[in-house]
Structure formats: structure tokens, C-alpha cells
Image (cartoon, rainbow, N blue to C red; front, side, top):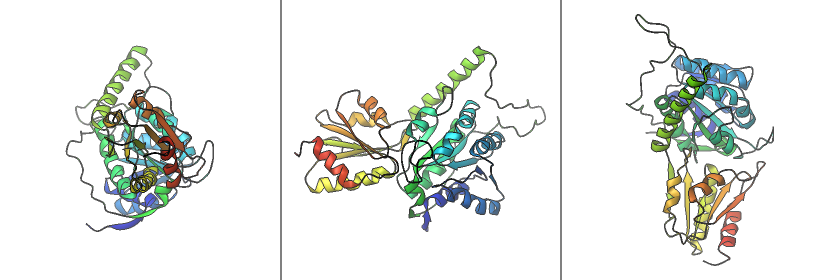
Length: 353
């Protein structure tokens, strides 16, 4: 299969179309504006429709409507725009509407900066909207993985009837890497017999809704959602694990920060240090069991993020106090360098190997 050199944001659009997404609703915001730009150009070529909404709030509600018809639908934005979509995302989760939401994170809080960051971890994994809901959250580390996870995201959304968020950052959206598109639709996708496609002969009409006026009915619906999330936690954890069994320090990082951490690990290994790595690919469900593989003799687990510390909560919960935890982060659009990580590891080890 031929590889094509593509910018990450454009690869998102190409992957979505290859996966059967024919409808996109969005609004431009740096550093993801190439996603709607690409979709506006390419969707009409496959008989699809692109709508630039009047706002991010409008865009996510258009996603709600189009997904309700059974179509594969996507929207994308960056951090402040995703914040505006939170009410609609909660509605989609409550109504069990499958869709893919791409967040190319930038520095915050507020309008912040257009530089890359990872400050949306809480928003994505804890839910920025109201109520008891979760999203499947996938974090690619390179453009090929970005393509693969966008494609897989559409299948997962349909299987579980849930929104799926692809959590990237400004670096992965703007970098160019060779990619190939190898989508094969899963054979276990359920029929969308819940979709509002018109009342067929002898069929009951479908109603899509997240409003329940009776408390008993809403609680029953919440129990149904929680059972679904339990299945997601059981079946959809994704993680990359490297040399953790006998490591003196284990670094944990996700997304493009993990690539920087790998460079640091290579430098440390050349100097004789034993350093492992855990890279969560699914941020929800978080791969807790991967941390059980770390030896009790490990001197520390170092979480590295482009934030002031958000994923470290899940790392600490996974370790259950068994091993000391440390943190190194940069925020506001600053990117940690390999040298910083090397020095932090040596500091944890007290300068010794």
C-alpha cells in the first residue's frame, strides 16, 4: 500500500472519509483549522456535506441531528471550542448517539495560546458537561496512529452508541508524516435500528432523546449507560508498555509527549540507566492494569505532560500507593525537551544508576 505524506489535520479528514464519514459540522480555530478546510473541499467529492456552523455550540447540535439519522458524523475543534461543545456532547452521550469528536489541544485556560498543550485531559476523561457520562478517549502519538484511531473511532462509536474523542495537540495536527489508509470496517457493527429514518411499515417510530421527566426512568437510563461503560472498560483499553518489569524508573506519557519521552529514554539507556515506559493510548478507559507490571523495587513513576499535571491522578490511582510518583510538565504551549526529562529521572535516582 502506498504511503502519502500528509499533515496531521488533513490526515484526520482523509481517515474520516475513508471510514465512511460523509457529514462534518465545525468551526475554524487554530491549530485544527485544516480539518474543516480539508473536509469542505473533499466531502462534496464523495457526495457528503460540509457545514461551517455559526458557532461551536451550533456545530455539536448539528452533529446530534445528523447522527440521529444513522449517519457517520464528525466534528473537530481545539480546546476553547471543545469547551463550548460540552453541553451538546453531554446530550449526545445521554441520547446514545455515535459520533467522532477531534480535539487538537492548545494552551489554556481561556483563550490561552495557539501553541500545543495537553490541558484538556480532565475535560475529555472526566466529562466537561453535566451528568454521569463518559466518552471513549483515544490519544495518538504520531500521524499514522492518528489515522488509525480516527478510523477505529467510528467503529467504536457505532458498537457502543457513544461519542468518541480523539485527543491530539497542535504538534500532531501540524506535523507532516507518511501515512497509509488501511480501513477495514468491523464485521460486528450493530444495525442502526434506533435511527430516525422515518417510520417504516409496521414499525414503531423511533424517538431520540435525553430528557426523562420521571426520576425513576432517568435512573434506569443511567444504569444502562453505566453498564455500557463497564463493557468499554473491560474491552477497549489500549496501551504501549516498554521495559517496565526491571526498570528503576518508569516514565508515563501520552500523545506526542510520549515521543519526546522515548528520546529521553534512549539517552538514559546509553548511559546505563534502566528506564521503562507506559504509554496510555486509551485515556478512557485508562489502562490501569499496565501499572501492575511495574516491580515493587522501582524507585519511581514519572508522569510527563504538557500541562501542570492531570493524567498523574489516574497514574496514582493505578499504582494504589505502591510506588512513589513524580511529575514533570510544561504548560501554556511550552513543550518539554528530552534533556529536562533526563535530568528529572536522574534527580529521582539521586544521580545513581
